[in-house]
Image 1 (cartoon, rainbow, N blue to C red):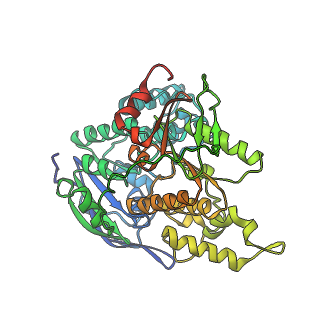
Image 2 (image 1 turned 90 degrees about the vertical axis):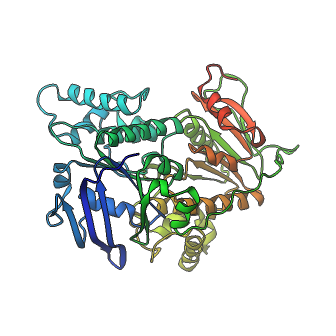
Image 3 (image 1 turned 45 degrees about the horizontal axis):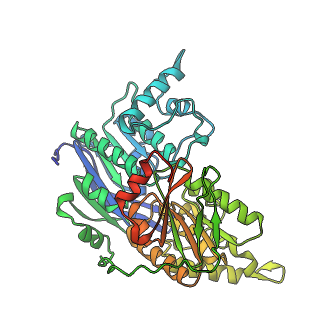
Length: 484
């Protein structure tokens, strides 16, 4: 990978506070033409805040933002950023759900006007989608709310690379692959390399270390609001990158002898997907971690929702960790503590009222166990970074008394250190007899499961124990033509 020395943007001594919280502290960073710059760090390290400043949606309190040697921090805005060719795809998607794909494109492309603008907008976004995500299956007339989250993320990314009478110099991608399966993520990262090799600049934020090492030219590591290290990506290894983030790189677990938990007892779950054309079911026994695999949008989330509704309707205890936290997870007007304790109110009552001390104690316990970065659990949950919001959703589910925990691709935007901690907690809870059903788009997460079902077109097409698991088998099953 070649790196140009032409600097597009120089951030010098940038600082930002939110009340008593110092989000950024004296940050220096530059973005160069012809380069993919990786930005990595734990949840709450300041990555998204820094990119909001670069995109113009936040204003820095201190420091300089230099473009062409001129400090533009005073009066810098989204409009000024766009004039300099800067676009951003934030982790929390910004599409209007009630509008079509073409109409959402028009919102970000004011040059689209006059008679027939919908047709023009549709043609532009389709060209961008076809270039980045061949075989995407999206129509410009589709209403965004009707699209699964993976396709919404594809539209948001394609829209950022769509231009009408504007230059495009720098694209910020904040956790762009968090809702994409491995095949689609590979398409995007391939496009990123083509774009930077053509002279563009991409700032890539991701917690998936492999894609950072393979895609980026340089990687900047952030911790506690500071940039603590900047190196060429080739100068990092997986272990040194984890260590630079302040996490001890643990060796891979030794291969353990697989012991099936499937015995003569009745399964906790034994249910056929609604679109299944044969007698295949998804089954889970007490103490099992069952993985749902396959390409994104193949019915895994729908099956989890189907199961959740049936269990709730039958008065059974069940909890869900949503991957699409803004739509299905957080109560945005409530505090962090209230978001965690909402599923455990019955256990927190003193008489007919909620015991505020018990509620606060539970929130504090799970703040410590999940390492939620905040000075005050009574702050709104929207004050947290995306990854820390996801930790709160895990705390809500795991802190409840539910015996069955459903997880809908729940690791979106969660840093590598926290992922390891959550994996360990899930295994501890499974050892106590709780059952987990875990849909994931990250193949390596299936290694933590006892049994795996692969979905394709709403049906289970493969059923395998962990000792039969291989990436090749998952991919073969995902693309096969006949249902097994």
